[in-house]
Length: 379
Image (cartoon, rainbow, N blue to C red; front, side, top):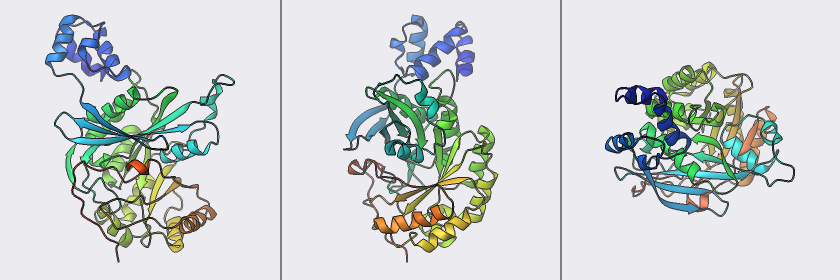
C-alpha cells in the first residue's frame, strides 16, 4: 500500500512522493524490475533490488483455446505452479458472449454507460474476465473439481494473487481490456482470507489498477465465518459467489465435504446477513452432475431454499476431469432444470463451456504433476 511504502521509505530519508512513484510503477504500470523505474534515484533502485523486489511469478506456458480463452501456467519463485485464465468476449449490449462473461463474474451492472463514449463505427472492444488462483492446490476436496486432487500445498501471498492480474493485464492483446476479476481459480479464497483481502485492497486501490469493486467477485465453497468477515471488511461491496451445487445436506456433503462443517442452514443464514448494496445480487454457482443433483425435483428444492435471498443462478454442466468418473447431464436435463428455476422467478443462466479444449473451464484447473485419485458417483 502507498502508506506502507511511505513509512518504509521515509525511514530511509527518501522524499514523500517517492512512495507513490514506487506504488505506481508496480501496481499501475506492472513494472517490478527496479532498474526500469527510471524516475527513481539510483540509490533507491539499488535498495529495492537488495530488498528482493522483482517478479514473483513467471509465465511458463500459454494454452490457447479455439474460443479465444487463454490458460496461463505460472511458476512461482519456489518452483510451485498455478494457473490463471483470461476469458475474452466481444462486448456490446445483449451480446451472448458478454452475457456469459458477466454472468460468470456475477456482474449486475448496466453496460450502457460503458459504451456511451465509444466512437461511432469503432470496432467493438474485447472485454476480458480473468479467473485467478489463491492457493497452490486446494483443501476443499469437491468431487467435481480438479484443483483439489493433490490437496493443499500452500497458500499464495497477496503479491502472488494480485501479481496474476498485473501479468494478465500485460498479456492482453490489441483491443482487449480487463473488465472483471473473479477469484474462481485454484484454491478456496476465504481459506486464505488475509492474503485474499489484502490482494482485494491492492487491486481496487485508486493509485493502482483501480478495479471497481463491482467488477471483482470472490467465490467460496461456503466458509461461513469468513463470508461474514468479507461482508464486514468490505461493506458488501465485493461481489460474492457461492458454490452451492445441491439443495439438501446429504447431497451437498457427498459432493462438497465443507458442508459437513457448515451445513446449508448456516450457509443460507450467512447469505441473508451479507450486506449487499441495493440492486446487487449474490451469484449461486450450481454445477450439474449427472445422476447426483440434476433432477427437476432438486431444482424445486433449490428454488424453495433460496427464496427471499437476492440471487441469480449460474448453472454449470460439469466439465469432465481426469480425477472423477462424474460427468454432466444431457442438454435436455439441463434445460428442464433451468426451466423450473426460471418459472420460479429466478434469473438463471447456463454457463457455456469456455476453454475446455485446453482444460481451462470451470473446475478443470489442476496442480501440475498431481496424481489423479478417481472419484466415483455417489450412491
